[in-house]
Image 1 (cartoon, rainbow, N blue to C red):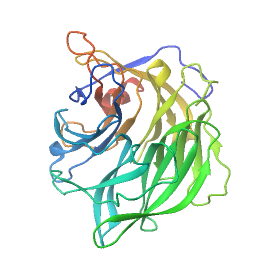
Image 2: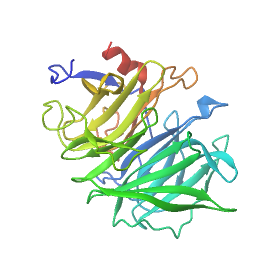
Image 3: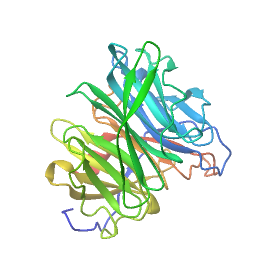
Length: 335
């Protein structure tokens, strides 16, 4: 599929696994956004984090079994960052936007993935009413780490993470306003850009080195593309030595759009996660991608997608969860 063309046939992939149902009642909109953490020494012990908008943070293993949960408040979006320079060393962290307190929560992940420790200042408050979308940026070039958070009014804030002897603190370094309601965000480490999804307007890119540079819009990311149906929700990047892609969940029609960052953001088409061994995924909020081998189980990486209308093996509606797709599934349908 070339740029400026919609796609006639919807490509299908299938989930290879799914998480346990989130801690919620059937019919509640609770599960929202996933994030993946690689256990480098034991890849089979890697973790999937999922936010629960009614409860807190849920933690799953690669088989999808919930192994821990943290009832800390209504978490909306979550992200993982590796080797973050904090406490005079580097640590892996998972962080999320907490809607109960309009703050950012940060946990340290121990090296074996067996324990999370809340390390952020819980008196911290953003300047936003109703924090919503969230992502991290580990700026390895400059040895700094940042968190981006937004709200439904289109306000976006960038906070730098610092550490003293016992906790992570925050300082505001930038704030701006988008043109409409926003949520999904992801940082392009290669091009040093922040991609931001305006739910009714498309996907926009912001220069992270020069705040005054005018943002640009990615073609075919809005209503000019018949393959998409609002809202634009989760954003994630697949990046390795040969491929640099941006994926977005098209919530209104249960699809996932693919843009080739490395080829001037050429629109490649959409796919859906169809029902197979596991239920498909519909009305997806957040997505995450890990674009490298995860042991022998997923040699090309994975896509994780929230499932808004989850069903059990008998077709009965059950609480929401997250679907796990082997990246080879996606690679094969796009040749």
